[in-house]
Length: 184
Image (cartoon, rainbow, N blue to C red; front, side):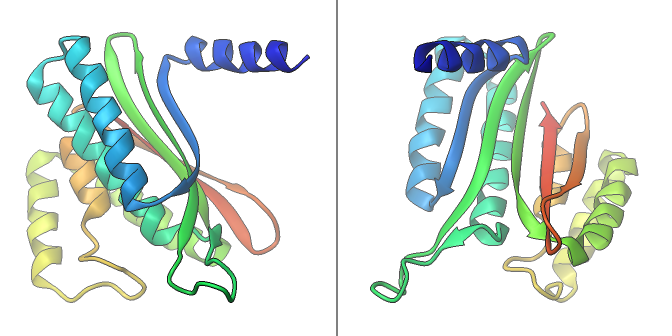
């Protein structure tokens, strides 16, 4: 039964064009290791260098978002407070000649509306509008709750040659599951 389940799962991924899938705790070390594999795969497939750079950059930004913001975490308990592992899902794929990178993780339900409004705004901007918003945010103060300058989603949208998609679904009373997909 196990082999059949795994084969069915593999075929499901394949039918969606997913060439790389990782579900688990993410760290900077995981980012570097997976990034190396993705680079090698893109090189082996002779992907255009500009497309490969875009895929890699979006991958890095998406994984960093999981590392910084996923609320499904393991802090190592009381034995080692320096450990902070954040859980997420990462997929890289190719469908109809177009690469995509998608990540998903838990967020607080109370943040869904603000995040949705911000991403909807980013979705509507053209490249020039994204550049202007990016510069505007860098000149402003860091948004509350942000662990960076707040430009990650804008950077993803700038690199996504064919836009971004996002979605939320309820997880439980407190949390929602968030997914972002960028097409390169």
